[in-house]
Image 1 (cartoon, rainbow, N blue to C red):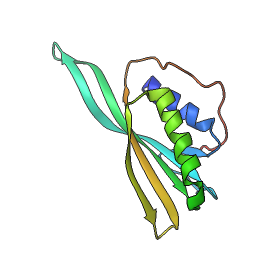
Image 2 (cartoon, helix red, strand yellow):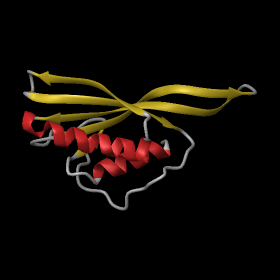
Image 3 (cartoon, helix red, strand yellow):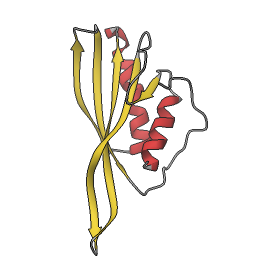
Image 4 (cartoon, one colour):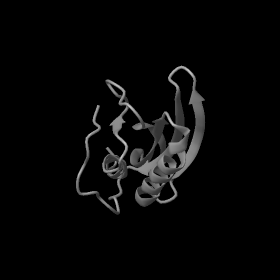
Length: 128
């Protein structure tokens, strides 16, 4: 697992909003996040070997109250910037009529072999 991804997961677990990797077994009440490392997005090959690569992932935020939008988006983007710099972008925002939740998705790119610049000290509850 890329160290930048691990640092991002740890930082998001320190936030006030519960998070799970890939999926929740049971969706929490209120706002929550899901993070996933989705696919290899680029690689560097030399002498017939893969010597470096990057991965693309996503952070999805779900929340029921529109009044929570600004604070939740700001918190998420601050964490993304702290860990990844500018290697992320807002991908989509929508309202899901089936669940009654607002859904915001960010995509990001992490490098496979870099050490994270910051590592949060502890993690909160929110594992799947």
